[in-house]
Image 1 (tube, rainbow, N blue to C red):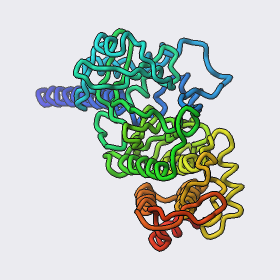
Image 2 (cartoon, one colour):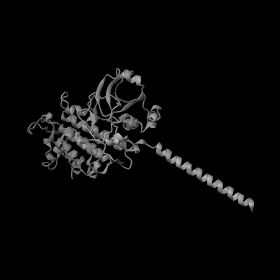
Image 3 (cartoon, rainbow, N blue to C red):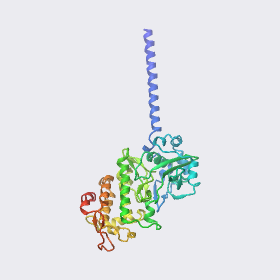
Length: 418
């Protein structure tokens, strides 16, 4: 009997010990997974400073941040990087970037390639951008995270992690990075003709002709279509604007700046609105939920910007709504055309493109077209057909390649009814 009691006590003790060990193991696993979870799932895992000033605005070629009375006076770099040291250590060990096949350059290599960082070609929210000539002869663009950068570690990692696996002819492809001496740099394929914004607003450039504007719009749409449907998981850009569209040697448009991009997982919820003033989806601003249709809204604003040459931060959308009052059956958008075109544009193309853009900015996201539908519509607009080109006061002009009314009627009409 006594042996039985001792056996019962011994067995119970062993069971309790095993239970405690299992419980501790489970708790450790949960904490480990939380600690090492995907940084893109943590929409709010950004520095306190970044949370207070999320919306970026731009001039012709740069990105700045809206003023905010709550901005702290701490060193922005210190506060941001202190939140995620293990991520940066991972980059230094090549644990993240190497898995994506992205080359890591040394600080000295990029210092030499940029002539000791004297070849500045632009400035953005991330920091200065330099033109670099690599030892291989390849010309690249190097973005350097500035000490007072308006972005930070989250944006740096977003670009490395996302672009490391995204390669498409309508995206600005990442070809390397550096994380040494406290300097964090991203290396891109060099875009010879700069940003779309510079061609729309900088007088040193010749005005973009109508056909080129339509083609650039299609290039951008194809890039976004790839992000929404070709990438896995789906990627939403969250900062589509003319300053983030770069033009290569052949004037082909490429989508750039993926610092705010995220994978779309059960909708992206944020307590703060992130994006660029003038391009941000109003539904996203009210719900704090960002989806592919939020990118579609921004793209619609971009279409109107391309057609009109007017800055979205200077009353473009108010102007669009005024012009829309006199539009009927997709006709009447001619007033919105950029004056720098001097009347040289295809009336029919402009009307269909404006009707498509107007549907993209529908206040209800469910009524906006998908990027696949947009690519289809713009492809039809670009198809060569014989028609008249608007010259001055609607005078007939020589025949030029454009699209017939029959081709677009069935594509654009269903997309333009509110």
